Amino acid sequence: MARVVYFLGAGFSQPMGVPTLGEFIQVARDQQQNRDEFSYFGPLLEQIEGLHKAGSFFKSDLSNIEEVLSLLEADAFVNDQSLKERFKKLVCDVIKYHTPPIQPVPGKLPSNWQGLVFGGREPKWNEFGYFTLALLNLQLFLEPLGNNVKVSPEPNPATTYSVVTTNYDCVLENVCEYINGSKLFVTDKDKVGFHVVAASRTQVTTQGRVVLAKLHGSVANGEIIPPTWSKAPVPDFRDPWLQALKALSEAQEIRMIGYSLPESDSNVRYLLKSAAIRNRDLRRVDVICLDGNREQDRYNRFANFGGYKFRTLDTWQYLNNFFQRIVNVQSSPYPSSPSAALEATHAYFFKGQMI
Figure 1: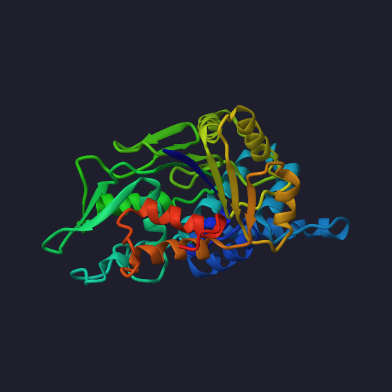
Figure 2: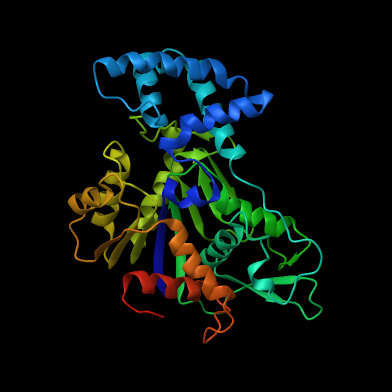
């Protein structure tokens, strides 16, 4: 049985509308203007405006939340804990606001139900929903009366997964919550979910065998490591880093999606190196990332491994190819197994198997 770790960065969630670091400041400004409850953004954004003086002396990208908070941290975060907490709340509120809810299709599911179980075509929850199912080795079947969708474990899956992410959002967890809370789905006695490890708390659902290690925390409880130059794992975040190290050390394949490998993220670089030292069976490191800011060059300089490949793709190309294998009933054989469809998609992009 193949052991695969998906390492997810900000580019993974971007198709859902979750902003990347470079989009964050403008998105926060727009959000403040739309809702009174976010009026507290104002003084924080004004403080960011005050940083423009740095640009008179040194190149600074004040549209990037990481650079902004790094400047503030160097100046005031160390001595002003309340400022740090307010910015953490801002980050969480922006992400939650821009993570759309799953809107179910009203009425009875149509004959082409496979493509509609996680709502209509916009936003793109079906692609992310089936990706979540694949990671959990779960499959769906329409019950005979056509009123409910049965969620059941895949029999004898060929691949098992773990997930490591630098993202704060709860896109994968939201899929699980939707399945567990919707009358559309019928599950076994156990709930659907990941073994989520984030900050000092380990959240485990009954069926949560698949690890989801959130290195920088989660908006679910507001405990996050702010995106600054010093994103070092503090003691409260020891558990997700240990779980990530364990998963990466045991992986046969590491698949990185939407993670740009920034020079400032030295802790993740050392995590990957430490895992490589421990790993005795690593065969592939596959990277899916856009290359608009020398991302491929950074990976090429970092990776020294014959099994490494970089593909200039966005998340949507990858997930949509996977989703079409689920809904295209003409495919042969029809992939009732989401994990089989996911493996076929990955082979299409990385192993030259045009299937």
